Image (cartoon, rainbow, N blue to C red; front, side, top):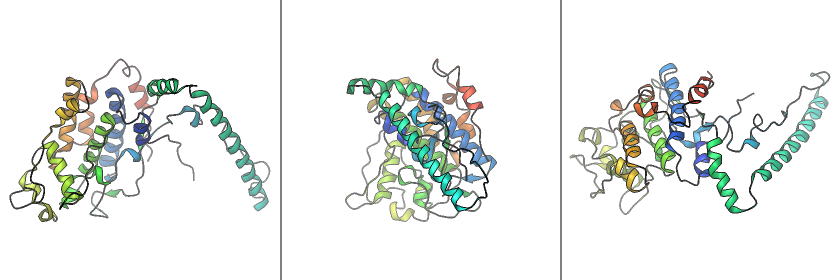
Amino acid sequence: MVLEFLGDSLLRLIRYNHYKGLKINKVREICRCILTGLDYLHRELGMIHSDLKPENILLCSTIDPAKDPVRSGLTPLLEKPEGNANGGGSSMNLIEKKLKRRAKRAVAKISERRVSMVGATGEEASSKTERSLDGIDMRCKVVDFGNACWADKQFAEEIQTRQYRAPEVILKSGYSFSVDMWSFGCTAFELVTGDMLFAPKDGNGYGEDEDHLALMMELLGKMPRKIAIGGAKSKDYFDRHGDLKRIRRLKYWPLDRLLIDKYKLPEAEAKDFAEFLTPILEFAPEKRPTAQQCLEHPWMNVTTQDNADNIDAQMNNLEIKG
């Protein structure tokens, strides 16, 4: 089996940047790639990924160029075997030994390159880490379709990793492509801030699900009653008025103010990003924009001096493999 070589995950990129969040223009490049993949998945294939998160989105290259066999200049590990390919077990053993030897040499070369890239002092290493973000190829692809399903043939009621789970999944009120858009919104926020948008936990007298719903409402406002009481599990969390049963006091913090007050984004930048993100986090699944609509949003079509010259060329080279 031959698989395409891909690089580090977006989670690795977030960690590499010390959970500080990426610059908006970098996030925009990444979002364009994710949305392009989701648009193909939803419209062309009719599939729901159902587990979109930073771990399941891989850069097209590695953060460290020494680990990329193309960018590092290392020769491929695999050589065309000499002699008769059908020569039996002894021939295969010889090939395996050659591969192991070449792998060891390649690892040694990569180690040498990594040593040469690291500064002699902590200050140098830190400055190189900051500068290296500008040289990272931000093109990426959605991976791990182990939990994917057809929109008209779903396999499980409980989907998505906890922190990226949509409200309709928690309430068991049915789901479709829009659950991927919710997860995308959570991922985009995490790229900008370095923090998960929702990190629910058990509390005194309530569980993770109810805390998760409370966190959503503190950010997005009160959930419409029709949605709150419309799921198979709604009675576990909401009373007949659409209020949470066990978490009565909510501390509202709108998305734009959160970005400005806590994460210190410039006001205009925060408001523009919040305007893009808020509809994606709509409680009503049918009101969330599609991936195609998100690609057409004004926020996605802002170009900067850093990426105006190369983003179109990069996207043209980003193949979607069937």
